[in-house]
Image (cartoon, rainbow, N blue to C red; front, top):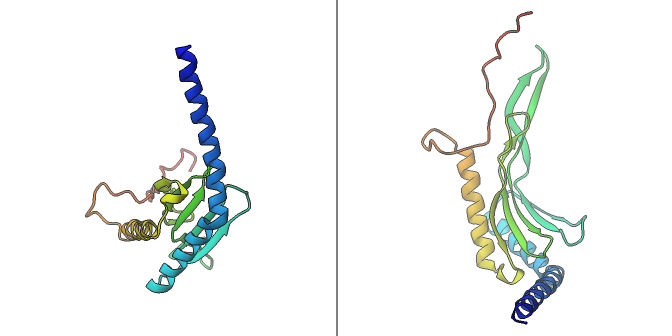
Length: 180
């Protein structure tokens, strides 16, 4: 019967986790989504940061809030021929608050990328939080970390040899084929 007591504790723990998922999802709907949105709006307004907010709500209980720094011309263009140039678009990065399947919230940084110029760096996970853990000081710290990471990406140089920017493009022309 000792073995059964251990199993019963595991069943209770499992049921508690399932109830937490329901509770976390409800907290998101009732207040957390709006609170995060308002805090990010206030930060944008007070700092003058050029950014937009978007709520992603196409899939219920996997909703998210995205603070985006937008898209711009990268200033880089590919010569298609003597008259035509193909401009490369730059995505300036974003800070994402995304519900997970279990109702917890993952906070991610997506790095800038230039379309057609290398591979995008994978998102950086700041953390995974229970709804009650996301307080105004945390949102402010997330923004600070986001801006720090984006600034490092934008200021890429050889002063930091281990710094990775996500560009894996080789500008050396491939060796000519035997036919040509």
